[in-house]
Amino acid sequence: MPQLSSLVQGYEGLILDLDGCLWVGGRPVPGAAQAVDAWKAAGRRVVFLTNDPRSAPEEVVRKLWSHGVKASQDEVVTSGVVMQEYLGERFDGCDAVVVGSEAMVRHVRLAGLRVIADQSLVPSADVVVLAGYPEVNYTDLTWAVRAAYEGATLVATGRDRIVPSDDGVIPGTGGIVAYVEYCSGAEAVAVGKPGPDAWRIARERLGVDGAVLAVGDRLDSDIGGAAAAGIDGALVLTGVSSREMAEGWDGARPVAIADDLALLILG
Image (cartoon, rainbow, N blue to C red; front, side, top):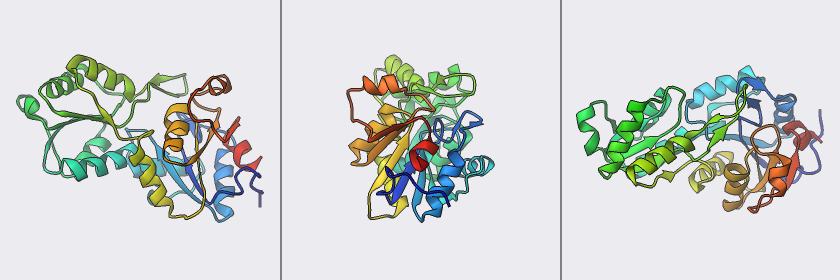
């Protein structure tokens, strides 16, 4: 059985980002699946926490298995899961405009909200949900701006400007948020990373009393968010943030910087 590195030996739980850590777009990060296997074989707990607003938890589980990572749905916390809890606690029974994938629309409905599908009802929306997805179009943005301009609350899955892909970085939800905020004059609440709700839910899912390590590829949402939640954060360099960016970063410092997840967990 592979031995865990001395750095991670003192942690009982792992909160692990996905895109940029386990895979980049559709390409697996070499050694990442083996690192997760070794972590679990050592009797440690893991929760996968992602700001990906497009995929349902069951879709993420299927992707994890396809990349050689054995996982259950209870171990996956997406920004849709966080959004569902946030909306259910504050907007149950309300009307929503949703800019997002079918998975996000389902989360909004499961939270007890009615999703507006009639243009004439847009100005009466109570909340606008912003969650980037590849098929976003001008009509989506227009409905979101119109509802926010009329006073609907803006809630976003996150503010990530870019996300990694096979061909290079692509726009994240943050671009949509900036567009709607600028046009409507409203300000969005971001419920995913680095917000506290995402980290609280992940920590609860872990169910450990000891120290927890968060691992991600972004200084802002992963390392900064973990630090704000009182969790140690380690940066891997297979995604968005580079070593040079980390050295110039004026926020919370990662407890470690590693070229990839395998080197972090296995040494």
